[in-house]
Length: 175
Image (cartoon, helix red, strand yellow):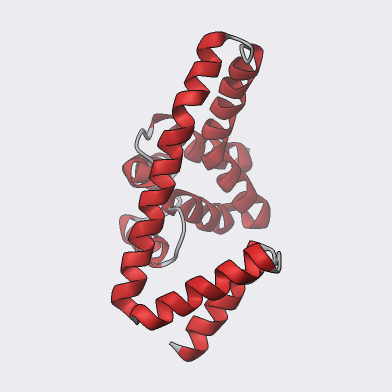
């Protein structure tokens, strides 16, 4: 019964919390503090502060911590799954519909129109990352990392994950 309560406590905010993790925090608080009384308001605010200090989505971090606090490792797994389950279910349903109508001219046109938008969004994101790194570490360091990354991935065919790890190590030790 405890694991079912953990599931419900994080599934309902996942369904109703339109806008992602920050929008679902008050809903999670209602479930955890008021409904099930697993934590006090003070403890919940400390968990929220801890979750905000760590990288990654806030809702899954809180679900993992609170689930672990209430039900151990299995509770953490149930809490995290319950947090991502609404999105997962919706994605599977929508992909099923998309796959069913994949030969439709409207769907083909839709995917044709979406590709350039995604490319532009990725380009804008890459430009912002470049600007931030240029401001943070300077032109020569940014250019050096960009050129070496390009050569490793395009000429030598090194997997991008290794290039990212190498850049992190370089930045960690030399910058």
